[in-house]
Image (tube, rainbow, N blue to C red):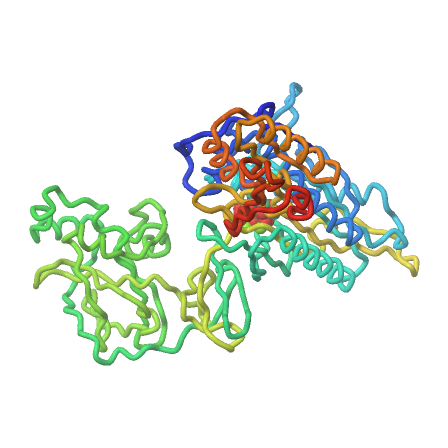
Length: 580
Ligand code: ATP
Ligand code: MG
Ligand code: MG
Ligand code: MG
């Protein structure tokens, strides 16, 4: 195929779009691959659509290779099946709901477990039909709270979703493993760097589940890995033993004063005002000054542990117990140096070996709570009151750290090393769903012995459109996009870099030959200056650029490798073998 740039529906942009934060978003818009229609809703223009289709094709081939059969269900779905599984409600605001002219409720499918289950129930009734794996590659709809980074987190996006139906758990495991291996082949072929991590099942339900996370600093998932053992898990899923208590020897003792008898937000504000903090701030002290800075994990002399917080937003239990529901729920955060710099209300300190004293009681503090940096908070002058300690980690009664609170350096659950954290973008997710959906819809077939057998199910997703952004994210450089051959819109970008007729005619000849040999060519036949053309070639990101210019008279063309940046003069008749 030959596409002439002079005819291509394409306009490249010199400037980054104002709303773009991550490189893939900036470049895909600047290079004219996608255009924004609404938040999280994008159009695919010719070059982008070619990449999307190529990614789809890789996914399709690998799904077919494990025996998956492609079908296509509607995106517009009736409410009933989702009501039956309670996901009509569970999905909350993420679900796009709508009504038809008769007032009947519909939704736009965010994922299709219900419908695939019903589809199989409708067609199959004998054990002889099983196992079966069905899939589709189709638009999904989720009203994401924060649509982000262009097509990376869309509200309409393309997903490959597949569903396996088996007669028993062993069958489910085999289907799951087949998908796991297919996903490894898909991401390998696409040249994506990724890790497989243990995951939680979330809204999907079921038991075992793993995520495929592409390495990326712009990822929204945090995972931990143990380099020694290879264990890896999403922080949402990891449960690990709490580290050994740290020694507090040698740490300075905090100056601890009694707090007001019964601290409340109001008394803290009054107290801070009386201490002249408002004067130093140049404004009245507000309740907000007392927020996000007090959180104490206390171990009582009798061994019981308790979280004591004062005005900690988001910790209802604490607020209710200590203060009454006095503040709005919000995230609990650790303080930063900037917070201390900005707010003379706060002082830094360590908890001393004697523990923390508050409310006239001396508490022993579990030293594991003070791993890393901990802060005593309070006034910055002697005689004022310490109100707490920010530590920000809770332990479960059995002594493990709760999911998401795991930190770098914590022991790996397998006991074979320590954990370090990294960020990634979720590109695939596989679930052993079990019986959640087949129980709801009573999907039985007649078994070999004449008794009904309930089917057991798995579900498996790949973010097809997201992968386009992930590849761009991992492969780009400061000049523009760079597409691996497997997904590049064209195999080679041919540039005429000379005005003379001979070079032009030569380029036509080379392009025709490439095409005959099955090479897809993007042909810059425009009259623009070579500088403009080279810049566009770099931005658009085909893996090879072939320049036909001065050397043509000697039968030479210049080959540029977009990945290595290497340039070489090669005989024109070897161009085909060089780019294939
Ligand atoms: P995320 O954690 O990124 O929100 P998810 O866990 O909600 O993803 P799944 O329900 O597991 O997503 O869907 C399967 C795959 O679909 C994901 O692994 C991801 O690659 C892709 N995906 C999910 N949400 C989006 C989105 N808003 N835009 C693009 N791709 C998405
Ligand atoms: Mg999500
Ligand atoms: Mg997820
Ligand atoms: Mg997921």
